[in-house]
Amino acid sequence: MAEQSLKRKAVNGVLWRIAEQGANQVITLVVSIILARLIMPDQFGMIAMLVVFTAIAEVFIDSGFSTALIRKNDRTQEDCSTVYWFNIIVAIICYCILFICAPLVADFYGMAELTPILRVTSIRLVIGSLVGVHRTLLNAEMNFKALTKFNLCGAIISGSIGIVFAYLDFKVWALVLQSLASTTITSMIVWFKVKWRPSFVFSKESFREFFGFGSKILGSRLLDTIYSNIYAITIGKVYKSADLAFYNRASSLTQLTATTPTGILQSVTYPTLCKLQDDNEALKHGYRRTIRLAAFVIFPLCLGLGALAYPLINVLYTVRWIYAASLLSIIVFSMMWYPIHAINLNYLIVKGRSDLFLRLEVIKKIQGVAILCVTIPMGLEAMCWGSVCSSLLSLVWNTHYNGKFLGMSIIAQLRDLLPTLLLAGAMFVAARLTANALGNGALSLACSTAVGAVVYLGGAWIFRFPEIEEIRNIRK
Image 1 (cartoon, rainbow, N blue to C red):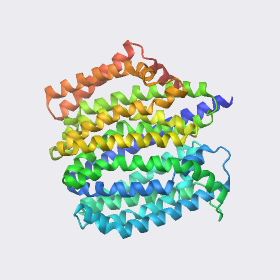
Image 2 (spheres, helix red, strand yellow):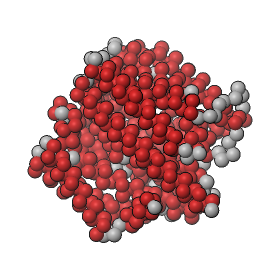
Image 3 (cartoon, rainbow, N blue to C red):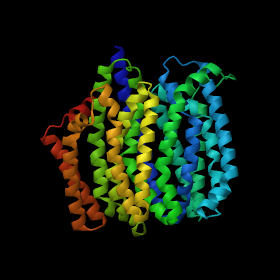
Image 4 (cartoon, rainbow, N blue to C red):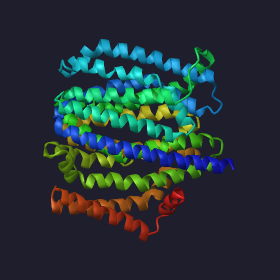
């Protein structure tokens, strides 16, 4: 009965996370399309230059404590309160540092107007820290229905605010106000709707326990955040802000098809698999099914996006954003492997081996920076191809410990994924040829999408892919 209850929670969690992310991404996409027609690319580039600094601050604010809190099945009020006050203190410290260092950031990019933008944008770090534990508890309890409602309210209201200020010609400040409004509105809703309240206690024992586990997560996530944004830093420094906007637009679209679906799976499977952490056979079975299902959904989404890149960008964002299509058609070959990376690494966190997680992150980041340094002088497209090479090499590292401990080596996993990979590749070729023949208009986008869907779904049905039955079971 307990196993059936856990499965039911996991499936319900997946459905609500899909509902949240699907609706949220539709809202975000619509808002971004409208804003892209009202605001020039270089204005978007200015915001993208600053993302890395707030992202690094968010890593320090969390410090891996939320992951540790979810993993601890017997968490107490003292544990939660300790994490709560820690988050707020670090958030205030991070904001003060960013406020003081804002002129230095502006000098680095050679754009004085970045100083007030960073100072205002960073306020959301303190606001978000006020409900960090509330969100963590909702995730731990797999109450994704509530999270869905809260996040959608924030997305709709903040998106409307951004559009209004963009129409009033506030330019880059429309984007700043949209971001600040999103965090503020969502945080207010979470605070009033979630009944948990912190106690005025700070336990040294709880802090030591969480820091022992979370410090490794902090190190690995810090490396990952810096590395994930190192392209933005480099492009913003070496090239024009508009070039960064094109890269950021392409990267954001790939997140719709790779990062977002993977995040849904991870947010649901992590608390589920933590309850099975002592049963290796159950873990192996769960991870194998998750990886195959993730690839069945995400491979065609990524490759389909790459095949439709030119008509998609032209129709949605107009021809002035068309260079983003060139970058998008390359980046998808890197991001399509993201779920395989993430799900393999998730095993180490479930097992509490944050030390091995950190070791892998260090190795991969050294590898990635080396490839980046080689490709910088060759231009943006060469840098994107370099990220593809780095992603493929990282597969070897990320599957190492699953192969060692669970018998899920890279060869075994690729054998499972080969049918999906071949079918997704056939779909890519068919959709790309159709798009090339019909041009970059709306008709080309519609026809290419239809051809790709028929090839992939038809092929999966003809060859009786087991993932189809898996999806049917989830629906039931």
